[in-house]
Length: 285
Image (tube, rainbow, N blue to C red; front, top):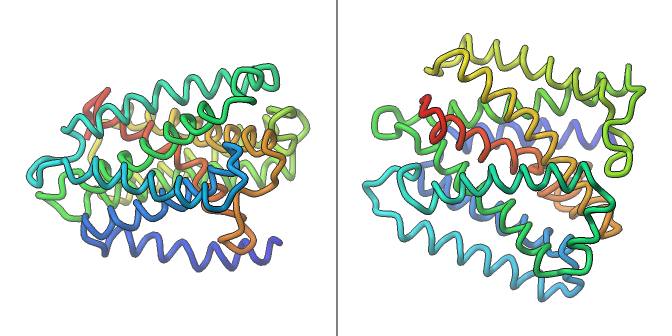
């Protein structure tokens, strides 16, 4: 399993970086749209949609919703200045705070949504839609001045999340003793969380030192820590929904990694939270 994970990572990471820097905004938006549609397909299982046709329709409807929202944005307007993106990013902060409460109170919290397919579908929308707008808002940031500014910011968030995830795995494996959320994800430990945050901080510091990022250091530090913590919450939240659905992986599209949601669960929280804090709350970049 580890071998497949490493091989897939070595293949996917260059592809992701190439997409960030080489695709036009329209091309990047279409790729992100496709990822969100696949995520919606997989979320159908978490929402209790047993039929393949139901999940296909969910993916199609999700794609149509995002495409229609994107088409209503005037060509000359940056995404972060339009209501579609702003509402989605603010909704992300509210949703992930609510998700934190659901995770902390699980399994008691599941009594509120376990029997409601509609509510679980709403949770999926609140996960996927802000992720879509966070990706586009960051990628398009200052595109008229420098085509690669937004790509560097998105890569920064991804490196932040990859560092937190890898550090948590290694430190948790070596030092893990105290369970972080045993009722949600028994494998995660407090030692892993701390190790992941330290690893993420070191990588982010190195990245910020040598990459062309322009932001106040203290603001960037605060937003980065919150985004790294949000990435852990994103992982735990998906684990909670998978546990309720009785499945180990959200899908089988990526060898050794499971489904699309299994790979972007941390990013679905970190990207919109980071974008909202940096672009709307602090107006830092």
